Image (cartoon, rainbow, N blue to C red; front, side, top):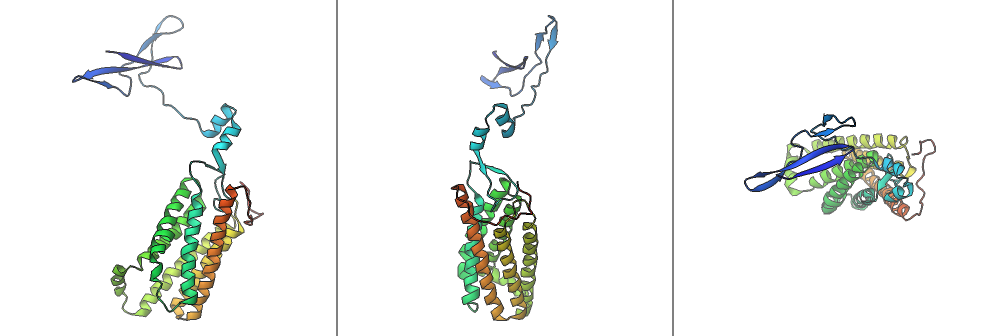
Length: 287
């Protein structure tokens, strides 16, 4: 029987190897308390369970070893155009907000094209983009942004990723029988109006929050404002069945998509040390 002794802070902890059926198994915890002599020559019993290891944070490591420059090299500044809460991000991954913004912008501009130029035609051709790019890709990017500290921006991306994934599912032929529960077209139009009114209200709430968050920007408020107008006008169209209203919603969808494209470009070029104007609000507290 062999014993491996690990010394930490003046205390000895033993890990013994025991034979079971011809194989040596190493215990993950000390088997017995160990004894040692103290400074006065008397026997003392040490605890059989080692203390838990606590790992210092990056900030404490940097201050303890006097490595502020090395620590800063391990992180990068968060994008004010995308991330409003966190100050720095690790270098282990790129900015997921860019993917989320561009996926949202692409599917929104496709919707705007159909609403503006082809309001009388079916827009089911955008199903793959709505389901995978505007839906799934934006949804995943939002959760990754949440993981890296983007509370507000990640919530926005997850929300509209779910919205577009749901909208894409409604375009599936297999889902059409579910809509037969509505007896008339007017019943279906009312349901669509309620659906879009609710999303418009949710977007309006996000827009108001964007005016007060830390590092709030005009570009973010711009994008959310035109998304709100697009959803609101779409709901009005379902209630009134006035086609020019739907065409106007196509224009507002273009404006929202342009804002999202611009925000994504600003975040990309920020990493290249090129600052784009995003319109930081002076009344918001800087991080």
